[in-house]
Structures are given as structure tokens and as C-alpha cells.
Length: 239
Ligand code: F6R
Image 1 (cartoon, rainbow, N blue to C red):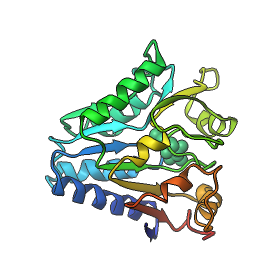
Image 2: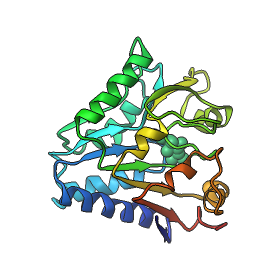
Image 3: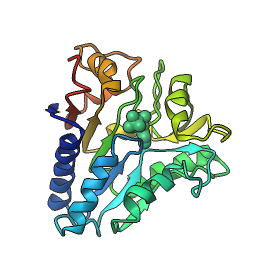
């Protein structure tokens, strides 16, 4: 594991963008695994700038997102589909972009279809992850067992509370999501975990305390043979 501690969230985004740039230069037709949430926004801005400046060409790249609320329509402003369009897909040309469908009639079938689609694309070369306050990655919430493939998950109270900031007061918030499983994430050839902000200091401390906490899903990811963790000083404050 490579652990990089940066001055602030902006330099963390730039270092993460360097990892993406190297990946795309090394394999122009690569497959990227993408995440949503507040953490990757600066990274996506940086990727858009580098693409606009002609530094990175994403035109042969295919992308797969980690997760999507369920049920949700793609045009809902809080869907992860809308998030990706707003921050990246409307600004950068990719060969193709893929998300789990929050409006699939059979969520289990949709998960199996998505896993098969990733497999058919040759698997994910570089998977980006953020870290939940409770240690979740994707929407793999703390549990006693974890899914090998994509699945339908009930969100925990913690996660619902953390994400309620994105929903209006009277706006219904989905209580389930479709997510790649820990096993699907582990299949990526490289993993980039990005952690920023003082709100992540406690969970970052637990993640790196030398124990494999089974109630911190992100701990499993540290066992991956090619993982880079980029942390800003605020999140690393208690290390
Ligand atoms: C989003 C995702 C989540 C977030 C995590 C952190 O696709 O997979 O695991 O990465 O909830 O969210 P932020 O970055 O908003 O703190």
C-alpha cells in the first residue's frame, strides 16, 4: 500500500489526478471505476481542466460507477447519474459511461447484468473510492459479511443522516442503493482511495491503526496488492 499525505484537499485532488493521468497515458482504452460524493469533486474538476488543456484524452476510456440510489430516476438531481453528468460526463468525452440503474424493475437482475458488463469490458483498471464516516466504501455498509458482487443494500442510519444534506426538507430520500460489492471492488487492478476533511479524521485513524476491523469495510481494501491512499492533512490529523 502506498499512503500519501497532502497539505490540503486541493493537492490531494491533484495527486489523485496524476494517478488517473498516468493510468490513461499507460492504457488509453482503460476502464475506470468512479465514485460520487463530495470527495471526488475537486478531482473531477482537475480532470476536466487537464482534458480541456489537452493533457489527458479520455475518448477511449470506459467508466463504471460504484453505486446508485434505489429506487431513483436518472434525472433526479440527487441521482448519482445526475451527479456524474454535472461534474464530469457533460464536460469530458468518454468512449462510454455506465452506472447501475436506479430504476431497474428487478434490482437483483440489474446487479448481475452490471457485473457481467464490467467483466465483458475486461474488468476495472483503476477504481476510485471515497470513504464513508462509518468506514463504508461504495455503499458497502459495516456488516458481518460482505458481498462479492453488486447487490441491493439497505443504507444505515449513519449514511442516511450523512447524505440527508443533499436532499430537500420534504424530498423523499431513498433508503436503499445498488452498489458494487467488496469483491467487485477488489477485482480492480488498481485502487485509489481518496480521503479528505477533518470529518474523516476518526475513521481514518481507525483504518490505519494496524487492525483489520471487520466493521470497517474499507479495511479489506487495504489488503489489495495495488492500493494508493491519498489523504489530506485534515483527515490525517489523528494518525
Ligand atoms: C459514493 C460512494 C460513497 C462515498 C462516501 C464518502 O459513490 O461510493 O462511498 O465515497 O460516502 O462520501 P463523501 O465524499 O461525500 O464524504
